Image 1 (tube, rainbow, N blue to C red):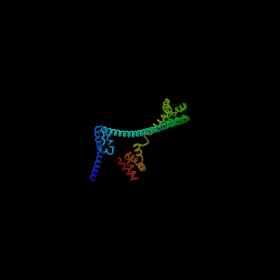
Image 2 (cartoon, one colour; image 1 turned 135 degrees about the vertical axis):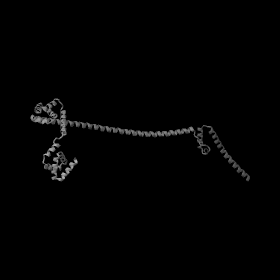
Image 3 (tube, rainbow, N blue to C red; image 1 turned 90 degrees about the vertical axis):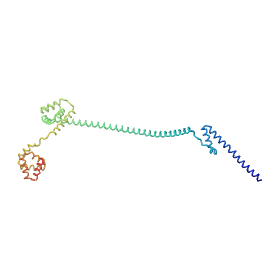
Image 4 (tube, rainbow, N blue to C red; image 1 turned 180 degrees about the vertical axis):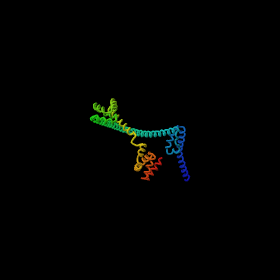
Length: 311
């Protein structure tokens, strides 16, 4: 009985091992066969088969991972670079569009600014033109007023008797007389010229011979007046006394009178007192200083000191 049980147990163990081998051997055969086929087949097909095998739960542990072909890897790398370059180009295009939009906006702003400047320049031109017209009108009015005044003066002198008008006109410049006489009628002009100095009348007649416009006569008259006034200002004054006259004047005076006069004058103009004392003769100066010292010894000492310092 015991032997029979052992045999049955041994038979069951042997049957289980046989079943295991029955399952494993086909799998091993399949794996070996696949390996041989993978060695023989194309790399792409092999990679596809390995990819399929890696998806099988048990088989994936026994098969290697698919190895990419160098050309395929290079192609994938190139594709990645192309995609990266495409993304970069897209970004650059976006930036370029933004810059173009900014540039377009700047152009529009510049156009508006140019339009404003043009409008302002037009306004400035209009104002300048208006100002020039106003200035011309004002100048015309001034010229008309001046000419009207000349005619009124000419009418006034023509209404006077020639014997009274002639001396007055002779104190004017030749150009001024020509301007006034040109505004008179021929009879009044002839009567006044007849009463004037012959030489001046001749000069006036020669200038009136050349007929010119009233504006030219006005300019000539004004210029002659300016020249005459300038000459009068530049002419040196002859009212002052020279040293000889000063010496003669104080030399003929009494010493006491001269001393009192110079002491009073010293309070107003000390320099002129020194000039006078320096111009008189030595004997006259000593007499005057002697009289001055009797009246005001202190002031006399100051004057003498200044006289000695100026030597």
